[in-house]
Image (tube, rainbow, N blue to C red):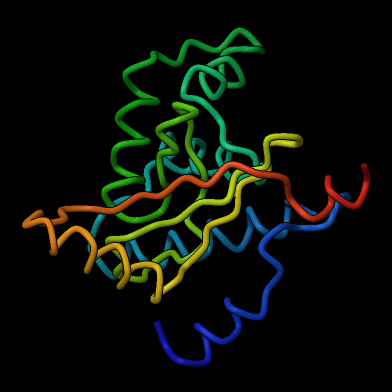
Length: 170
């Protein structure tokens, strides 16, 4: 990620304001995903695109069966394995993340960046989830586990709390 992109990400609010236009986020995510897939010579198939769109419809993590229910609401016949395969492809390509504590998925805020560590701020009131990229936190965790002789393969930190919008509303 370029220094300008890092500054832009650092300056952006972690939690979108209520009434935020998710359509813009979805459109931008699809544009980036297409570019990433083209560069990697992989295919963003129709089902992968639809699953990515479903994940990006809001900033609240969505479960695989919720996505499946959306697809089949109008009488569709999408199989659960098709959704899970699409989610696996999207995760493998750094386009979405799995929030383990919720068994749900969220769009990657840093698509295309090579990051093996992810931190998520999850609002317990509204469910909005923001991806946080913190080099100092990554270093501190790496040092703490290395001191115990442990080697990190991947690092996902989920922090539950209250977003600024919910805090201000109460």
